Length: 134
Image (cartoon, rainbow, N blue to C red; front, side, top):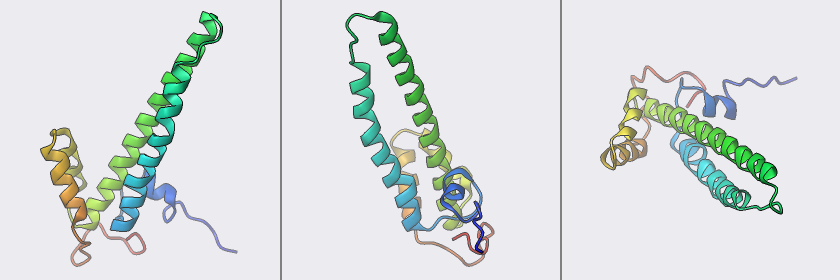
């Protein structure tokens, strides 16, 4: 019977900051998936925020509060996923994960981080590379 390990699954790729992430997995998990989730969630969020329940202010408040909580949860989780996958991608190109903080520099930081994530994998003398993590 095969056992499932979180260290080799999607959960590890999305939630953990250790190990490496190959380019294809990074672009799929760190870019395409959050974009698709946001493209699905934001129209639903806008629709829910504009719902009117026949003048029932209490129900409108509950819908707006639920919408706010769901938006905050989504933003925090997508930020975590971005930082985790970008850190692993930087590890794969043999750079420290601390370079991910370049995103705090408007325009230039995002551009530099994007270029770094496009670099090819470097598996020689890479201290971040664990067997089975790339």
